Every structure is written in C-alpha cells, then in structure tokens.
Image (cartoon, rainbow, N blue to C red; front, side):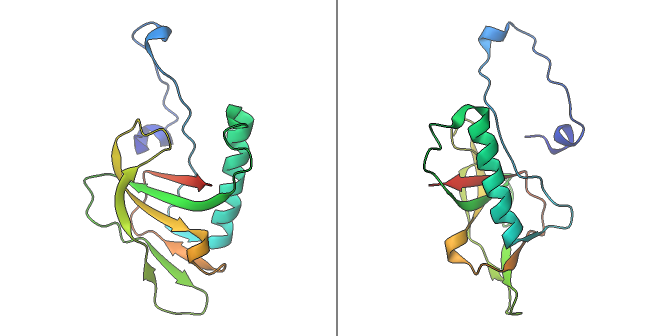
Length: 142
C-alpha cells in the first residue's frame, strides 16, 4: 500500500521461507493525477476489474455478482479527503460521505478512510472529484 513503491514497480524480497507467508492479490483501479473520474469510465473500470479477478481465480466467488460501487481508499489518519460528485447539468458538487472501513474485501489490511460511490445513488453522467489522490480504488460487487 506504499504509493511510491507501487509507482516504482518495486520488487518484493522475502527474508524467510515462502511457507511462512500468506499471499493474496489486491486489485485496484489506477489513480488519476488530476483526480477527475468520469462516472462512465468508473463503471467500465469496475467491470474490467471484476473480469480480471474472475480470471485470477475468483470465478466462483464472483459468480452472478455485478459491480455496484467504487471505493476510494485513503490513509486512516487523514481528516476528510473531500470526495465529491458533480453531475453534467452544472449543479454544485455533492460530497460523498467518508467513513472508516476496510480497503479490500478480506479485511486483513486494517482500517482506512473510504468514500463509497454507489452507482445507483448518482446520475449516470457526471464526474467524481478527488482533490487528494487515493491510496487505492477498489470495487464493490453484489
């Protein structure tokens, strides 16, 4: 979950035998430097991420599941990252609530600040604005 190591494609070296570690994949949508995410692109990225997870061995777990939301993940010590949704009609941006939660499904990584953008709660056209770059962008499928 280190942003710099992620950018640098750092190599992970083990200092003990492989059997002493648990390995689990973490999938994230790539963060944008400008912090502007079109709602349509988020929906498409969510479906692509589920497809990748199915191909990586989660086919049965994701059987009959659809992508319903995007989760913007921030460091737990952060106050309010100010994630907002702006529709294309030009209305004032609406704040997406931020709560304490888990970054990924298996809950092994501790608590983070998360802003969940449920597709059903917002118009189909619009943008999500993230003034602060998230640590990860996950998906929620139900």
